[in-house]
Image (cartoon, rainbow, N blue to C red; front, top):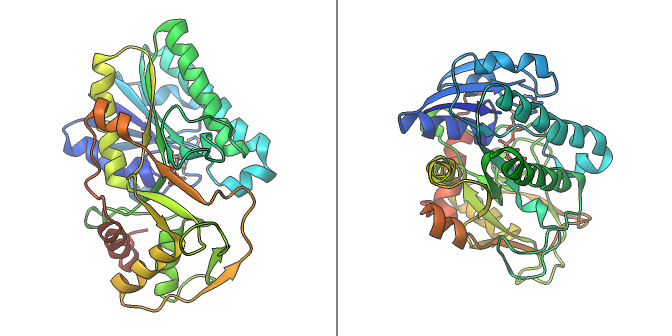
Length: 323
Ligand SMILES: NC(=O)c1ccc[n+]([C@@H]2O[C@H](COP(=O)([O-])OP(=O)(O)OC[C@H]3O[C@@H](n4cnc5c(N)ncnc54)[C@H](O)[C@@H]3O)[C@@H](O)[C@H]2O)c1
């Protein structure tokens, strides 16, 4: 298939492009390089275009496209609290522009990057797809709106879609020259590894008084190559199934902030100094995915189901980043 990877210069999108290319698909990347990296576009050509400028999108469809993977978003939870309109603009209005361009060019398949943030505060230990969806920030709300749009587009004109709700993406394909490089970086594993390397402004643990075994928040980390594999499987799913579907993607294993820091210390062989800061508003104590539906329906099994290989791959990238 010829797959248009929107946001393919970013972290998760570049790993999806790699996995698509290795599976024999043709890849074109569409990106405005707002947070992505030109150097991360190593599989397929880059079309510089902006979802907020609809007139720039047609160029990406010059060669017939079989499916779109849509990774473009602004995705900083804290920033979304202060700049809600910009978040709805980019994440919702941008997606509407992309859907219209797809319609103009008769493309009827989309895999969409959704997020655990659509659920808001968990009411059960393991979060499955039926868990209530009450996002507590504009970022999560913008993603939930797009999920609704995709359902309506399935009913309205037969768009096939799969929304994949990632929990915490982590790890890298350092040997292929790609990895996580956000600025600012808000994710724990790269920040712990920066602290291990003596870089960055210092690591802060946000709260150590949560009702968890060591008082710090527990999260579900899923390797970015496992996420990419789920995208590949979603293409096959859309061949077979009409409609709009949602799947949670996580390991199903929770790790506390202190456990991640300890694993990063052990695997890097470096001290990781950190300070304890105030808990962040809207940070639930535990967020762990039930990915049973993805396992059953997509046949997806995370290959990186332990913390060590996830951190090892991130550390390999961190020691020799290509960008
Ligand atoms: N990284 C995670 O842990 C995580 C977790 C859950 C969901 N997600 C979602 O997965 C997707 C990818 O996340 P990521 O960490 O790779 O982010 P990223 O910022 O690295 O990648 C996003 C890419 O989209 C591009 N982009 C953004 N707005 C655009 C626009 N208007 N037009 C064209 N290009 C645009 C950026 O330049 C960037 O290359 C996002 O939608 C994010 O919300 C990520």
